[in-house]
Image 1 (cartoon, rainbow, N blue to C red):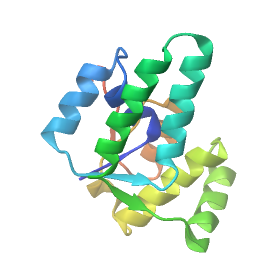
Image 2 (image 1 turned 135 degrees about the vertical axis):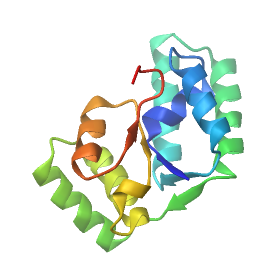
Image 3 (image 1 turned 90 degrees about the vertical axis):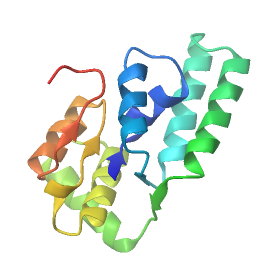
Length: 145
């Protein structure tokens, strides 16, 4: 099982430079755990691409269908007061946006004190650094090493 940040889920939905590596990582271990807000973050990323003109409406509809299929099989960390408190700590310790802090807090909740046992999959450099500092092994699809 791996924790997947939204930035790493999007390449499973639409063609990006990291799509091949992300797909390989997913096929090697399809047990995904994500934060509760991941579907919204993915939909937002797709809508942004549509507004910018890099995806047409049909491609967005197809990507949302792929999102629904992946979502039906993943495990989701639900919001809680404890998760929010952890995210507040994380934004004070690391230079993270609120949503990224919630993602990392969700991964910490799943790790149950053993982050070294739960790979954290992300394409976000700042979040990757924070996850590494919290003790997670980080996988960045498409990057060497």
